[in-house]
Image (cartoon, rainbow, N blue to C red):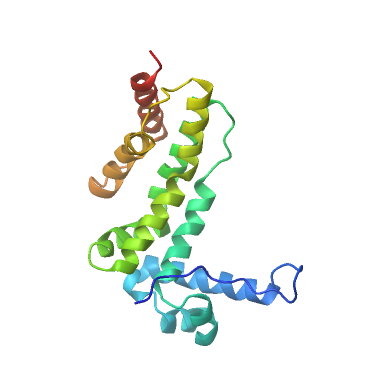
Length: 203
């Protein structure tokens, strides 16, 4: 399979917004992909199946998503984008809000099935390996912005490793939900954040 590419959004002419018909087709295709992912798993998300479920032509689907893995990517990316919250500049609040977004993401049937599929396939399929890396970058983007801002304000140690910090914040939730299969509560999120802040308070 070729590497997934970002789906285009067709405009009628330069300077105008997206073509409403193209937007409707994209929304219908992603809705069909979401349903198939929940009902039958990632292998059911094919151009043929999405076309049959959504009514969007296969030619259109291939143009926007040359590889079916791109549909899975965009379904998950759509969920991740709704889980992010704009930082407020209050460190604990920002970390709790962002980590709670991850908590909700992990309990969402669409993102849960999608993330499990990506993790499963990444070890044997280069396309899914690239997809996993792209989703990791997007999923950790706001965490990194919050941490960088806090370091600049002197609220966290200047030499704090961002990768390690993201692991310490998100890792417990990923392990608890995806591996242990246990629920993640809002109280658990706050405890993870408070333990992190206690461990990394400037000396």
